[in-house]
Structure formats: structure tokens, C-alpha cells
Length: 155
Length: 420
Image (cartoon, rainbow over all chains, first blue to last red):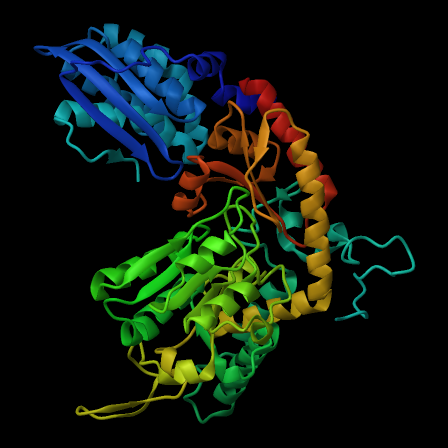
């Protein structure tokens, strides 16, 4: 395999792509939303349980490529126990990192979580694949806003 | 058929399928010199352009450019002559009876929309039926849905059979005296399934229905003869026939075009305008409002010359042989399933690789310089029916050879190793 492909498909991504964590529905989720990428037909549903402002449980289901599956899986891992505000801050930061935008420094505990998402930032070099990495985060944002029946789209 | 062309290999020597050497032909396509190592297997989305087409467009702008059908001056007359000569080339390409049956449009999508908005809006009504098939590209589905929503006719869909080909018996059963139009692909873009258009036309005409054929994938691969096919409308896009983007052809029987109202108004399409009443031009100019894509039409003419210089029968032979090789080669890859294409597959290999998402596969293939399409290929209903959210598609052109297929296969193997 060529080296730049390894940049994109790091072991942690291949691992989470094959064996996604928190890949299950939450029966009594307080928040849920669907994400849809019309370009490739990928679909993801994000489930959240909020206790006040705190994310006590988060999971996802759906079908997608290795990048989108790994991104959703890693997202659920870093979000557990975070506040809604922290989740939004992480997304803003992550979005900036994968699109090559400007990222403000994060406070220490969040910066550590961001490091766990770092392997996904390889998509920056693959503009067609950025949406794969952000699909589940867009669904998360929609869920926090109150969901709705229509899936959020990446297009 | 040309035999004088130097790229046609001497039949006495080791003859390649089609009689031409794709590797030698590649030198006529500048994209390959500018992208060394490129294995281009996405001609079904858009074909690369030979230098003759690129040069023709530049030459036209440099030496012969002026607006058409307007100026009395010499340059405009010359430009008009070149533009109308391209129409004659398109006529011959389809073996149409008359150049007036060739309408220049932006592409096949616009051609289908033109037929829907003009012929359909004038002649269809509630209670009628338009029959399409499950093999269709979105561009042969959505224009009919838009019109159905306005007029209230029924849009009926003929299914595929278990092998992925058009189910002819079911197709016949879906025809009725209410069927006014059959709109069907000649060659399915998502799977490569060839549709027996002659039979479809015969069945449709028996109930008095008109037939529109989407020839986007067939035009660059088959020797299309609209008179032999017997259809009523035939459409194709220039950019898939080695020509420029932004130009395409609608062919329609003259009596049908002559009975159709204009669909867009403007200059070029009128005979006489007063504020009370406008008299429209005869076809084809009635349907070409505004300044047309003159350079596109002329470039398309040159692309059709390129195809004819290779020989339509030769191209078909090449595509068939390479399709066969591709089916054999890909079938030997563990975990790879070719998407069914019925009795006859041509030029397109759509497949699924166990455990590897098409977009991951396409990214890995890209890093091996192999360009393929991954996704639903603008045929979501078909893929849904076949049970795939997305597939990977390799589509062939005159510049592809067996070595390209071998490189594709090797890259697929590499992806399989990586992901499974």
C-alpha cells in the first residue's frame, strides 16, 4: 500500500471501520437524527441520551464506508460524558481540522479528546471524502437541535 | 469503415479485437500524456477527448468564428456552414433520414426534457400512460415525473428479470392501449445491460405507443441506426462520444418534430415576430432558441469523425472483447460480485466487493491511478432493486486495453487485502 493511503486509512480507522464501537440503537434515546450522504447513499442514525446538559449515552447505526463508520464510532467514544457545549466545540474544531479551516485552541481536556480524532484528519487530502468524516457529526448536531423527520444531508 | 487510417493494424499481422491498438490510440488523447500512468475506466460518465476534437474547437474560434444563421457577411456564412455540416455528421452517425431531424441540445438530459416539455405536454393527458423501465438513469425518470405531476398521466415501470436484463414478457404485459410513450435506455449506464430495442419498438408500436431511446451509453459503442431500430426519438450526449461537454443530439422523426410546439422561445427559432403573433421556424431550428453551442456542435462533428475513422463495427468488436476479458478477470477475484446485466453486457462492469465500501475501493483504486466511478450512478431505483446501496463501476473506451483491466484487478486485490 502506498504511504499516502496509509495516512488516510490508519490502523485505528480500519479497526473502527471493521468493528465499530457503540454500534447499536438506544431504545429510549432523548435525541436522535439521521444523516444521509446522497453522493454515496451512506446513512447513519445517531442516538443520544441527555441527562440535563450531559451526554450520558451515545450510539449510532447505519451503513457507510470505512471512513464514515470509523468517524461515527470515534465520535461516540469521545462524546460520552461531555456536555452539549463541549460536543459542539469538538465538532467545530474537528470540522476545521478536516476542511483545512482555522481552528482555535481547545481547553486541555477537550484537546486530549481531539487527539483521538486526529487519525481522521487524513481526509483533508481527499476533498471527496471529507463528507464521509463529518456525516455523523452533522447528524449529531441535528439531533441536538431536536432532530426532525427529514435526514440531514451532506449535499 | 476506414481502412486507410494508420492506426488500424494490418489485418494480416496479429490483429487485435477491433483491428486497432488502444495503446497507440492513447497517443491521440492528450490527457494520457499529461497524466502518465492513468488508467481511465470512467468513460461511461464522460469520455476523454482526442486531440482532433480539442484542436478543432480552438481552430474554429481562431479562424472561422461568428454567429450562425444571422450575418450576411462571409465569416458568418462560413460558421453557419460548419455548424450545419456537424448536423449532417450527426445525421449520418445515426443513419437518420434527414438532417432536419437532428436537434442540437445541451446533452441527453436536455433532449429528454425537450421531448417531455414539448411533445409530452402537447400530446399527453390524464388517463394516458408513459412506460419506462427499471434500468433507467435518473434523467429518463425525473422529466417524466415532473410532467406526470402536471398532467396527471400514469408513469408505469417495466421490471428487470432475475439476471438484470429487461424482462421482455413483463414489458409486453405493461403495454396497453393507454401507453402513449415508451422511454427506455439502449444500454443501462449502471450495469451495462443491453436492451433489445428493436423488439421493444415492435411491441410498443403494436399498441400505438411512440418510443424514445436513451442512447448515451450505446452511441459510443454500437453502430446505431435509428431507421433500423424503428424508434421515434433517439438521444445522446456529445461528451460520452469523445466530444465536448455542453452539446448533445435529439433525433426525432420529422413528422413528429414538425407537429411539436417550441419549448423555449427566443431568437433563432422564429420566422416572424410581432407583438400579436409569432410564427415559428420549422424543425430543427424551432427547438434551438438563442445562439447555440456552435463550437460544441462542430467539436461533436469531429468526435463523430473520429469514431467513424476507427469504424463502428471495430469499436463494437473491441468493446465486446474487452468486456468479456473484464468479466473473466474480475470474476476470479475472491468476494467480488458482478452486478447482473442480463443476456448481453457491453462496455460497463459494475461490481460489489465483499466487505469493502465502493467509496473506499474507489479511493484505493485512485491511488493506483485507476479512475472508476463509485456510487449509485444516477440510477438509484435500479440499484435499490438489485440490492446495492452503491457499486463500483468500470466503464470502457476505445483507449482501454487488457493491461488496464489487469491493473484494475491488481488494485482491487490490494484494496481487499487492506480492508478485510
